Image 1: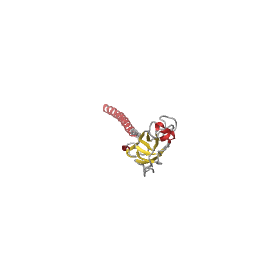
Image 2: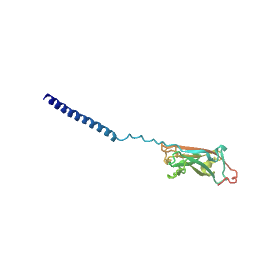
Image 3: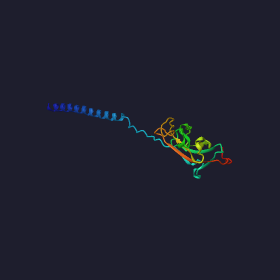
Image 4: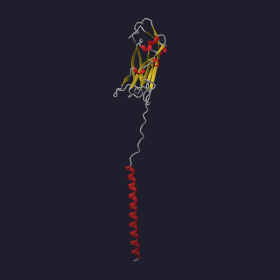
Length: 198
């Protein structure tokens, strides 16, 4: 009789421990699967910084290393060349050419040229050209023929503001960058050299 009672107690305790073990096993599986269902960590987004455009010095015509460019007022026009680039190949580029910027009473009238990249075939650089007229009033107004003048190419990777924001005709969005190059120019009244005017 005592043996049977002990067997019943052992059998009941076995059921108890078996049930408890099942609960532990179930909780472990739930935690394991819950861990598998959690989304993977999100990688931080790459920060893309705007890079400044450049006017390539070796590409400039007239060659600035030759000293001030002499332009005869007997010539109709002179052509200037420059190659411009931007590490951000998909940026649009904007440029304008100032004649004697500091003396110009209304630089906002200066034309703005735009280069829009081909999204399917972006270029690493662009060759641009522009014409300068030696008889432009910004050069020769108020008897200023004998002075040294300037031709400035201003390049930007953001649109120029067209309002009165300073610096006038040069202001752009704060995220943008500019580059510029200035040619010194001397005017003369000599006859136009052969082939100088194009």
